[in-house]
Each structure stands twice: as structure tokens, then as C-alpha cells.
Image 1 (cartoon, chains in turn orange, red):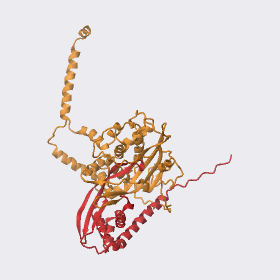
Image 2 (cartoon, one colour; image 1 turned 90 degrees about the vertical axis):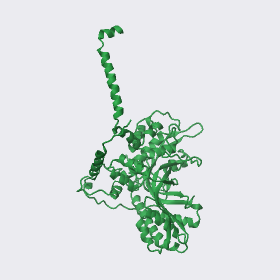
Image 3 (cartoon, chains in turn purple, yellow; image 1 turned 120 degrees about the vertical axis):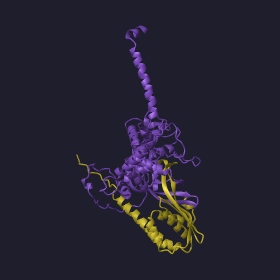
Image 4 (tube, chains in turn orange, cyan; image 1 turned 180 degrees about the vertical axis):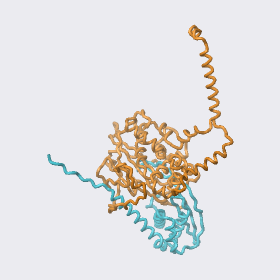
Length: 368
Length: 153
């Protein structure tokens, strides 16, 4: 239990003042702006938006600045802000096949309509620290080539045409879309709820679980069928306007994982799939998410549930870093009364132990 | 409601909202200065809120909730009675209000053409140019595979 503690007010006030001072750092160094964070630490902003579950670059940049770069603290701040605004409703589901693609790669097909487009990627960099960036840098303008008009079909659509891969679960207009921000989690959870949970889940947690599945704890033989990054238009059915209004575009990363077969006496074997989708450029996140989406389908696909990554209650109950940090960090709060009772019990046990050991040895043996 | 089921004016309004949503507030205001905007009242003060963004399982399946986005909205009514709505991602109430004003104006016979030629056309050109530049930068990173000639043994 926690007890009300009095007398710390001034210490707390001064601690926060000191925090603000430390956050600012050396005052001879220019203060970092939100635009600088948003532009130059863009992937940090993307992660905070994704796990904070709120698409707003400026607010995410503010959260990162306020949290001094502590990502989980920043995610916490964004989640708390979200609770202060009313919800107007839900968007129409975004159509990632209409994405203005800035990156699209597949590890399953070399040649496919639209091709392999690398975009802005760390892949193929040498991971050597670049001394040029220690000072002010002025990189070259990007190269340009005439873009070929045409669509970029999803790899899963190409496989789907021949029935080689399972179809996505169809929409049931009668069934409301699960929302874990409105209803408490209960198990077993449907895939819509699982994906919402994974979308806001800690990247490190999903990365480790995905990795564990690759190493054999719930293995499902994944291929990165396709990863795409780009902008998609968002529409919102505004009742007062009378039609779906465009709200603007958001940046998304999507991963289609293609996994080993299922089949039965009545159904021809086909590839199965795992899906990942996240705000911004969040490639590691969506790949991990797609791996774990697939492992969590073990129940649905009749696979033995033996590994942590296949246990939906374990995964979904521990994936949220705001919840996790809340429970871990609450250990810092005063537990004086709890601890006093433990201390009292321990003293009693030690006294009983000491009393028992004072009994003469010979007598003990005789008693046996 | 799909775009195919909209009437002509609704389709025009929707397209205009789509263009304006991609533009900066200052740019919209700058081009709108060239239009003699008539008197109007605020029907709904600019207001910030959230919209839950939805994706589809597998990209094309049943919907799921991905996460929320901030959205600003506003509504205006012209003295002549037309009501315009503005909805846009972010927390910029001024932008929502400008979109609402444009939406009201394009419903009038008097200002519709002026808004199209003086505001929407130049902004649309910018949005298209920006999109083309991005597409060209992206296209330059497309892989051209070639096969190495094998040595004859």
C-alpha cells in the first residue's frame, strides 16, 4: 500500500526546477527546436507517435524534448495528452494499395510490377560512424529519375491471384471493430484487437518476441513478402457534411509477412500471412509486428501453443511499455507501511529460528 | 459513401478539401486574399479532437484500429446561407476555418469560379509538383537488376 507523505512539497518543486535546468543543458549551446527534432530525429518522432498511438508530429517532437530523449517517457506524455481530447469518430480504413510509395522491397520476388524501390534506407550502409556529421553537413540533393506511372500491387495480391496464399479475413459489417482504448482486454482476443495492441506495443518487446520465433520458439518460416513505406490519404465520414471528407495524408509503413503453409483434407495447402502496420517510417516495428501477428494465430491455425510468442495473453498483457513502466517504476514510490509489516514478520521468523536453534542438539536427536 | 455516389457539387467540394488538406495555412490564406470574400459567420468555432485511424488486416481485409490522429474542424455560414465545413489532420484551427470558408464559397455561383482559379488551381499545381518531385526522387532508388555473364568452362 502507499501512504500519504507530507513534507516533500518543496523538495519536489526544487527537483522539477533542477530537472528543467538539466533538460536545457549548457545554456551556451542553442536550444533544440521542435522543427529540428521533427526533421532531423524523424524516426524517433515516428516511434513516439506509433507507440504513443497518436499521429501528430509536432506533439511527438514536444514530448521527446520534454522527456529529454527518454522515448518511453515521451510515449507516456503523448498517451496522457490524448486523453484530454474528444474523439470525433473513426476514419474510413486506409487503403495501402493506393499509397504514394517511397520505399517498397520484397524478399520473395526479384521482378514484380513496380520493382524494388529502396527509398531512404539504412540498408547497405556500412554502419561506420560518419565524421562529416560531427559538424554541419550539406548533403547532395536527391537524384531524380522519371517515375513510371502505374500501380504497385501488393505481393500478397499477386500470390492471391493463383490461390497460393490465404485471403485476408473478410469484413463483417455486423461486427463492431474492437477498441482496447474503450473496452478492457479479455481473452481470447480477436485479430483486430491483437493488431491494435501490437501496433502500440513496445518495439523492443516485439523485436525480441519476433526474434524468439525465428530461433525456434514458435517457428513459422517467415519471408518478408513486402515492406512498403509512403503516404496514404485519410478520409473521415463526417455526418454533418454528408460525405467522407479527406483529412490529409499520413505516412505509414506496412509489412506483409509470408509464412509456411496450412491446408486440410478440404482445402489445398497455401501460404499463411502475418501483418504489420505502423505510423511513420517504422520498418523494424512492422516486421516484428508481422512476425508476432503470425505467431499469435497459432490457436486459429491449429498449431501447438508452446512458446511465449504464441501466447496471446502473455504477449498482449506485457506489450504496452506505458503500463509496464508504470508497474515497474511504481516500486520507487513510498512503500513504508508494506515494508514495516514485512520487517515485523521477518523479525518474528528470525526470533523463532534463533529460539529453535538454542534447543540442545542431543534433545533434538532424541525427539526424532 | 464512395466517391462514385456523390453528386457533382459534392465531388467538387471533396476534391477541393483534398487539395487544401495538403497545403500550409499561410499558403491558403495568401491565395484567398485575392478573392473578395463575402461576410460569413462561424457556425462552429475551430475545435480540436481525435479521429481513430483504421487499417485493414492484411491491407485488404477486416478493419482494425491502428491509433488516433489529431484533427481540427470548423464550420462557417455565408450571409447568403451556404454552410462550409473544414476538417484537417493536426491542431491548426485556422486551417480548418479556411477550408470551411473555401468549402462554403465553392457552393455559391458567385464565388465558385474565383476560388477555383485564384486559390485551388495554384495550390493544386503545387501539390502535384510536390508529389511528382517525391516520385522522381523515389524512382531514382529503383533497382535495375542485371545478370553477370558467366565464364564459359
